[in-house]
Length: 449
Image (tube, rainbow, N blue to C red; front, side, top):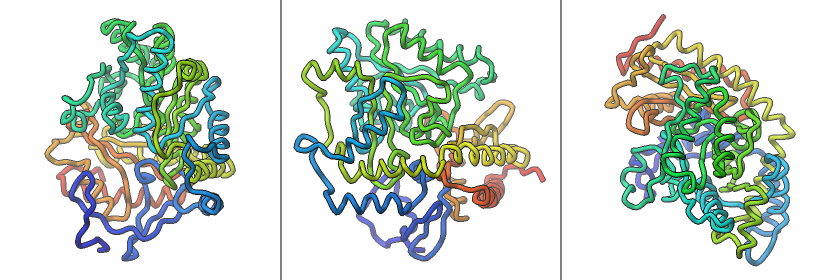
């Protein structure tokens, strides 16, 4: 089946998958010729699809010139052009760009910049970064300390500085109406409560995904939540960091998900769809005032060898150009609406689908034992693995995580590339329905005929 008999690689588990041969558009093929539909864009990365010739040609042109130029030795045109483009796309005042190679590096950069800004502005007592539970912000120890996902964080607790957490706005689990502004205020005011309990002068920043990623399964905040969060951070002179590692790059229908609420952070991070999987690339974008204060105190005490790599920046610039020229923000919104409608329709057939949520082409559904109480499926069933494996056997790639802090619950992200068509949505649904039917039989769960 195209798998290597022996591998010297190791990652999260001992599971093996077929060996990849090639990928085009939203499809991938293994070395035996089996085709897979990339229904999760990898890990919500391949926003413009695979093997886009425009991007590949931009990379070839840059490779003919140079593939590396260390940032302390040279400035490069691709890095300057991409930084200018990113600044133009960012909220007003966020004009300074710091390139990295991935999401964890971007988050790590953001919290270190925030801390240096506190020192530069005469606020040395500010060091705590509030985040949410559940949440995921990266795998470095600094980013992991912000992450609220017990199965990933617990082994490393003795090695990390504990950071305060507030509950994520899971209105669908708490029996609250997400369309009621009082619900949004209810969850947002938990931030103010936490600030007061910890001591306002000790709080450096609050980090939030505008639309939830893998840890909460495309969780959309209740009405008024994002606006109230901004108010609270401003009131207590706390930096607001938007983690757009998964949402940045247009997946929700806007280039940055925060634009849906007209809310501007003080620092913003992105990766994944930023270079759409063509090369490792991420960025931190910060407000001028923050960067100016830090630079005036001797510079940013932080950096990565591959920051601003000219080949990566050439790819990133070409990806953004493709998003714009192909109208992929609009397509993510339109096709995302079609796909979401079809996913919601599955609830009539499968009583164990408890919720469907998301924006644009960042969508998820959650499985439960009881839709009325939202009680999760037995964790021993490991539905989050089982359904993914079944779908994979049917040629559909989807992405899963455990909903309740990594310990139980099962949600599945269905996030195909932003180039997806209505016909391809139908193809996704055929394979997904087949997979859900097989899952229901194996898990002994009901199907409504």
